[in-house]
Image (cartoon, rainbow, N blue to C red; front, side, top):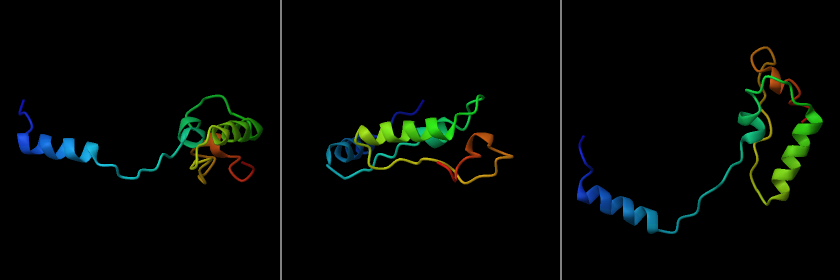
Length: 80
């Protein structure tokens, strides 16, 4: 196993301490639900999204515009 060089470690430490803006994107309503075996209703998905929003999240990926044939959980994307 090769250890990282000291120079690399210094760069990493410097990058970690710099205050740079970042964006948190919640994807649970999209990625998290698409693999569930039991279909979640649009009403429940909207309730989840609203609760996530109430937590202060600014960016929430709510659904995916994909074929219901391939991802049945997203069949109600227009309603959500």
